Length: 178
Image 1: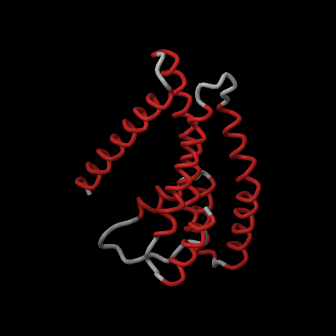
Image 2: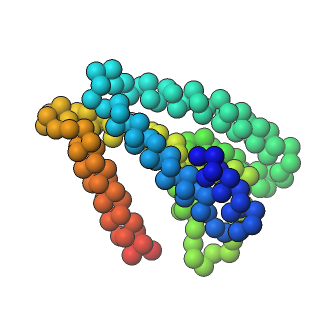
């Protein structure tokens, strides 16, 4: 993870517009999450709330401090006309939805809008969404594993394949629509 964080910095400093480090970070984080999740499924003490509380304890204190500091900076340094847009980004980021907001703002013919103070939180939004969704997938895996008396890795793999296929088909349809 440290190497991928270094790559993020290198790509942003020397290769503007490329995101190789972020991609590697997402792949590695996903691997560790999936591997850890598979290790937990099937254990008698499998606890969905423990997974979420671990995420909240690790991330939320710093995240809340950052959002509060960014909000204060907006009130001090941003003129009142632009303040509402920045505060909207803060609220959306607090809900881990900045990536969807930015994707919805993209129009091929629109001029580039100024970058919001917290726009970079799109990556954290993706991480937060995965941390919310993956335990749900693990809980469904555990339920199906018990119902079908099947090995957890098989059920988990089939479930992730179904989710990935659904996401891919949706992306194809969404691109065709746009």
